[in-house]
Amino acid sequence: MAKIAIIGVGDISGIYLKNITGTFDNLEVAGVCDLIPERARRAVEKYPQIPKIYGDMYEAFADPEVDIVLNITRAYQHYDVTRAALLAGKNVYSEKPLATTLEQGVELIRIAREKGLMLGGAPDTFLGAGIQTCKQIIDAGFIGRPLAATAFMMSHGVETWHPDPEFFYKPGAGPMLDMGPYYTTALIYLLGPVDSLCAMTQQSFETRVATCKEKKGLVIQVETPTYVAGTLRFKSGATATMVMSFETLYSTHPCIEIYGEKGTLTVPDPNTFGGPVVLYRPEEGAAREVPLMAPYKENSRALGLSKMAEALESGKGDFVTSWRLTGHALDVMTGMLRSGEKGETVRMLDLEQATNPGETKK
Image (cartoon, rainbow, N blue to C red; front, side):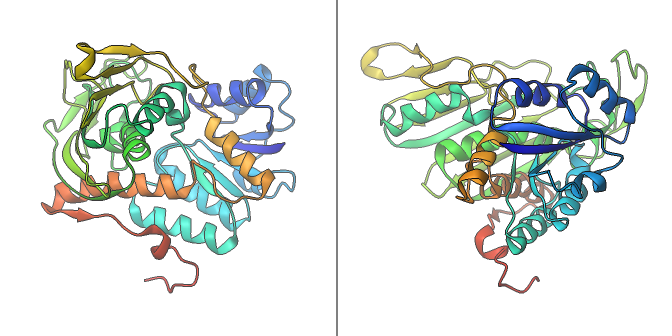
């Protein structure tokens, strides 16, 4: 059983704590830590099996009982927390994204590889019943060779409902790095690695006004693109159109569709573990919903962490939510932003070569 130190006890920590303590029997909480001590105290009150509250993250990193550090701080804090944990000799599983720049992500991967540590993270929703069923359908050839795909995350932002919306309009967030990880990871998992991409970005509003009750009336400065549209070319030859928007009041686009030689597959919302899977094949005359053929239909966050713990226990080293996936997803997402900024096609990095511990850092 892997003992987990949780750094950050904000909103997302609730589902992690629920699943670590009640769903995955190969995980155990070693302790929790938060910059706001009251959050950590509330977590222990709700889950009295948590043995300790760390005074700070460095105390957690120094705990010899800790096998894995679970970094569920804010996205802009991911790099600093993960880097410190790796340098302290701890394996790390981070919430999405791995970091907010490709350079940061490459450095984290390099440190992990140099020290022989495991590094990976969210999202793990693609391991749920919905996308796993889609993977089985594609692998079984029901839509033939995948030729193209679309991915749309169309919303008008978070200021109407999120209790702390400012961050979502800062560099390191926006629709691409906040929601993009779910869509990007799902596409990579279903279609394979991305070779190159091109994109255009825009920021249509200089400010947003919060209407959530916690920050009602707050004027938020928008400092990152809030509409990102691009085209991905996969190494398989397939092409995908991706749009991530905080500028859309209403849309009827499906979250993800895969278009193959023999049919079309509608993929459920990649921010969920379950959801409807719809298959269309011309000979059947109509689209039909396919029964889910895999476990984990409900919110199973920490499933990827459990996979990491399995690999740690077995000594295999690699696991499905490792840096190979999270790092590539980060390259794609930041590549979309770089392409939009520079107006040019961006090729994806060879992470194996770029983070080889034997290579001199450039």
